[in-house]
Image (cartoon, rainbow, N blue to C red; front, side, top):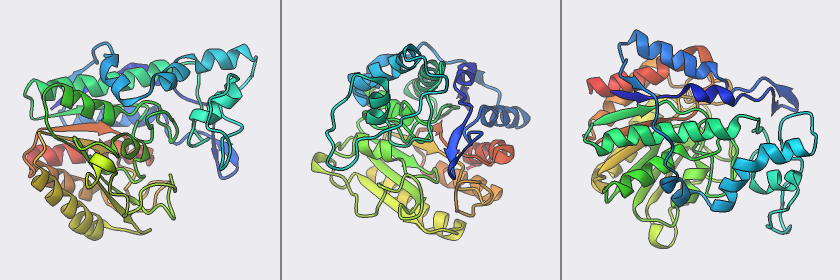
Length: 343
């Protein structure tokens, strides 16, 4: 399996995250990447390459130009105010406020942010670009005829919408890769999101489109971040009606329900859709010991569902998303990949 990763991910690492009313060390941290790389090596998955330079063409088809300009200039604008800390919004446009981008960086941050746990640092934009480049680098292998590839993206991406960031995400790597698949000749792409948290950004991007079928298994929004999207009745709109499928699941969900019912139904739908490419938003925060999630999958379960995905017999591109039980993230991520290779 070809694996694309970049050391530039280390440029993004905020000092703190707002959690439970206090600033804590961010759950999304550089050593997540290190543990995955270590486990890949231990399992003999060593076809590892750096990404090519980022092609902004598919990025611009996914994200608005104003939003991309904001990400590129946010840190410079923050520094120009002589602020001492990292860039975190202090105000957001709530109900009945104007949805209009301000000039001042405080307002800009709130306008483009969907979750204020996510800080911007001096290296965030470069790291986000390198993460998207990894996704596109792995997609090129699929376009060239490889049956599978893995993009070890950091920061993750599936919470980033057309014009918003948050949930540790800045550019939507999976959506960008799906767009690149279409641009490379695929007529239909399925995007399966197995991260614990609903990929609100991916749903936002493709909700009115009929060329990408988005399916997400996640903690029910009444109880889990991002709270305001991911309900079962969200099925798409306009041309995208019927191309969005959510599986919100209750606290304590174990593999019998997650895999035996929800994933199995999703796989059957993907088979009927017959995509040219399957993109998997691979979050392993469904793990039973993840600190910010509430599913009960075991490490063995990740191997089992990797094998199930292989049975779809579709070119498959894995894009790394979440997973915050850091010492086990390597085992759980690589279990999916090795299960897939053995399936």
